[in-house]
Length: 384
Image 1 (cartoon, one colour):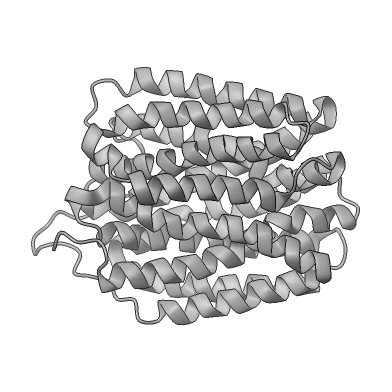
Image 2: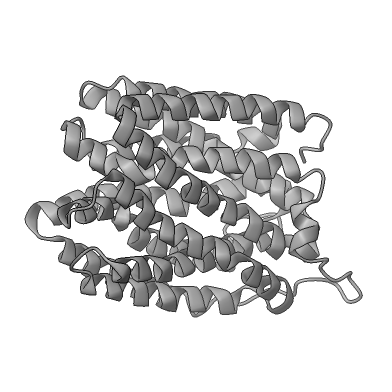
């Protein structure tokens, strides 16, 4: 593989990922719609959790397909399913079984796209620039987080949630069109060993610490990806767009201007300070009294996310056997849904009992303790 990042497959995949991620991140505002329909925080947690359940349930199937049949078919099926899900939101008018069904369809789409597009990107990044390349590809998911928050604020200021759902449908259609030219590269040389399957990747010793840290990290993300909207609505502090603009701006800045650091200094030298920044953001959010603190929290969490996600991603790709990359990526991406599945109901219940400040602080403590445990578990494992 040539030692450059901006290959045609990489660029096309990044554009397709950007469009689908923007469609998906408009739903940062969906908890507000559920609140309009009469849902409280625990109910919102359960409804959001339905999507996470679906995303986790489909991962074993995705692992087999990705390793045996390639990435393109899953990408196209995921884009089509995403468009269907966005259209179905237009039919949600009340709380009940139907909203759970729509969330399940959206969960299937998210799982297919998150897993297959990131696996496709890993296939087309030169190993010598893996951390930097995967960080840049991840930026195509990060920038839409800020845009989703800001665009959603603008749409809802002058329109309705139905207008938001229509825009998500248009973007899903664009993502599908951008995915059509994608082609799988020849996966392995003739005679290469076959994949041992999902279970082998799950229990591979040097991947186990990464699975643990990814689960802790993803559980922390749930606190603001699911509940920041209702935090803003109930407290009047800051805005969704304000937080996620700062969050994404910081994450993009470190990836674009300093994405080479993990390759140069080593992943561990960057990962642990990044996790400390991520934790600091939760305590800033817990203490927030106005928009300034919300921006500072977004900056701190964004710096942490900007490095933590691509470093964990790169370590998984490096340590997993190439013929099991699809399985390893299915596990890695599934853990973000498992984190959401665990975090949404439990954090929703904690907010109902103790309030937002205590919940954000408790999440920071959880991530900090997880990082300490990870540092001990991962000693002696290779980092590149």
